[in-house]
Image (cartoon, rainbow, N blue to C red; front, top):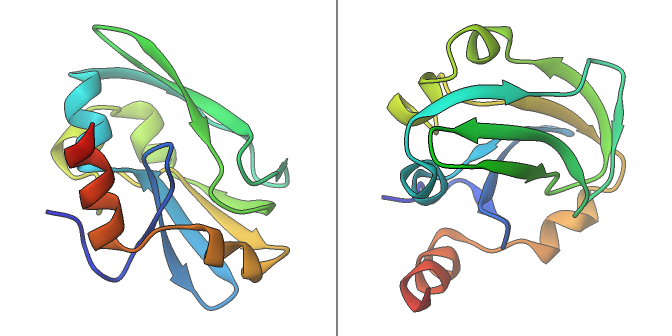
Length: 126
């Protein structure tokens, strides 16, 4: 259910480390809790994000939720496809439903995130 090659935040974001960059999205649990995603507001390439701080919002038929950066750094790419087709977040949260790519300013922040097993335990406890 939760890919083992990713790191997870307590805020239900995931990050896939690719060198000094991290591809970020929301977890299966988060998209399932939100319901049908209808809109996503993301930063622009060049914007700076800080670990634990909001970088955008995701809106579903049920609610609007903040998105939180799992690491600090510069946004180097934004998934334009998901902005045009927000339902990709529901269909493929770990693939085509990714949100942004961050050039990490402090890769050591990855140590503050959970592995798949720890994240799974957290969502089970509720």
